[in-house]
Amino acid sequence: MKLPIFTTEGKDSGDKAELVDSIFSIEPNETAIYEDVRRYMANQRQGTVNTKERGQVRGGGRKAYRQKGTGMARRGSIRSPLLKGGGTVFGPSPRDYSYKMPKKYRRLARKSALSIKANEDAIKIIDDFSFEEPKTKKVVDILKGLEVEGKKVLILTADTDKVIYKSARNIPDVSVLEAYKPTTYQILDADVILIQKSGIEKLQGSVEPAKEAVA
Image (cartoon, rainbow, N blue to C red):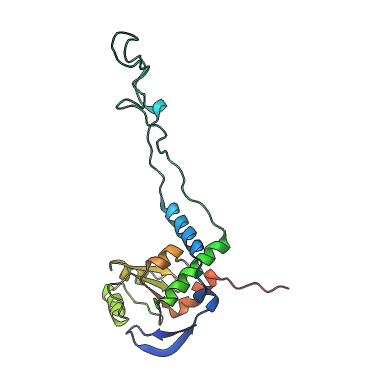
């Protein structure tokens, strides 16, 4: 698959970027995508919610009522879950919701997500760019030139570029990541994926590492 490379002004530079078909042109595996997105969402949960069960509630050291004559139930403790202020039955407690998936399955999910975006023409390649100092207007001008202003845009840079990150962080729905970092969820969540030309190789290498030569 070949895609045109745009300049920062939004014009076609005349060059084309070669994208690997085994990453950007596969039949999407919906099950892998679902499982990876589910894993990502589960891993974001803090798991800090906590409730007190019967044994953790304060009070209830004495018998609440005398055994006979009150016409009320024979309650042994005010910590009973049946009473207001009593303990919780099977309430949530701190736990770790995260879980793992096989690396090959995660890669398949990312390939499937990238193939979906490529099929929707939601991937754009742009010449490498950077700024001497953070300037939000420069990023806005780039988005306007590419006609993606107002959309949810994921910008993938070849390396860590704090200047670009700071320039884009105040723009709603625009995020900046290193090309090897985006998850299946982040890829699908974006309306447009803007990849720097030098970041293509790193993105492809993170999804489908080159096989080591056998001696």
